[in-house]
Image 1 (tube, rainbow, N blue to C red):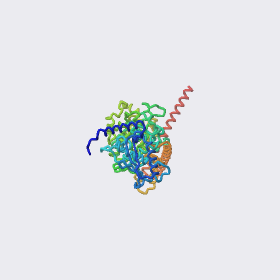
Image 2: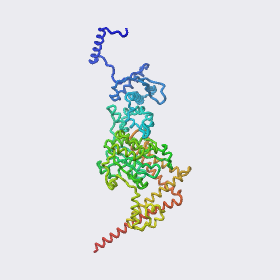
Image 3: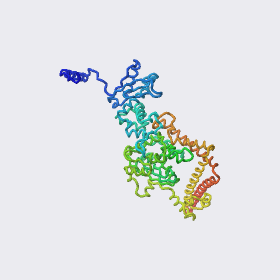
Image 4: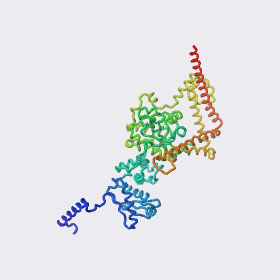
Length: 615
């Protein structure tokens, strides 16, 4: 009868039976039920298929980390004929269905495809239990980035290049499943995606065996586009990076430059020097991480800049190139503000930068995905301490204020004396003031009538020419620097005019221009240098490919620019071409005049020395 109490003798019998079973289990006389993860096979399989299915399960289970394998879970495995083409498995509730084709077409069993498919579905089951795909840190590393103006994360994962399987970009859950496949089955995963490998290893408390990974991180150095002596592939060891600065360029005249430009400067020590304050003097080795819109057309479109029409890329540039670009060409100051980062944090930040450099395919938008936002996301995703601070800002100066507020700026390292800050490279002044000082030197010697250097530089080059061979050594050296600045302006005016001329469809120079753009694009999208299949950070053989490919692209780009420059000069209006040629002649004339002055001074000293000997 329902609800009736069992007789006392029945209760005693049950207790005795339970005690006996427990004793037999402990003594080893009865087999214990399997503990931990169990994968049961569905009924209806032939003897051969059942044996193959069991072999597959055994091959997968021994690959799982103990923490996963020992967790109490029961799943059922069956085989399906109705899965879409290219889909190897699905999980619904506690039932896994794998494609029957995995059994039918395998030459060797269990096949790599079958093992990966079962691991993939088991990963979904673990994700649902432990919420891996909802973990904020994993989402940072995976590429579902936080948004600056709205709460939450971007719905698009922009890390599309160098992916092991683009299906990982479908959702965070698929990202976890795809990456757990590679974490468990690919020994190179630790070297290709080191930060994600470390996250999974921490989650499981154990990492599968992996080869030793070199400490150097690969970056394609965009400096090779203009400097034939530069190594196209930079192998950067984080141990050589003594510090990271937030590099801030002042406001410019162009619409896209009104807020300034925010970058990160890597204080890289010269080979053989131990990391320390002296590394700040190794300027030739310093590099800049700069997010920029890759403009792939002749005319910069403000609308495309606002609407995400240009790719956003992380460029790696020599510091001196960046300094010249802003202080000499654009006449904008640069501030270099040291960040307070530990060596481990510097390593983590550089590792993240390398992943962004090789995999990121973002879109530049002037308002909500500009240089400040991209730099903030790099810091946020690379450094948990930065992620915990509210650094989100859409302006470069706003980001600097938040870095200071979060205690990430090392204010003690900044010299209080402005002159010392200039000497040590914490500040780079625009050359406008320097040009004025140079002009004052020349004016004092030659009696020039123009009071301002801008008035002097605005003169047609032919009007400046008569004065260039009249000065002494000091005045002529000053004029040479001014004429070089004037030549850069003439070249910039010629380029702007040439763009307007070439904008017409059908121009015969357009194919040459497009070819130069394609070669230069390899430095904006380094993954295009690697034709072999691969993912994540390039391994040794891939780095060799990237080095050779970048070198070839850089050489072709430099040659194409020379050909384009020579061919395009004939297309310029006569007045523009004459002005450009006269500016070049002015620089050459001053160079010859300075050599004559040096020789005359050397000859005078030699005659004076001879006279002293005779006396």
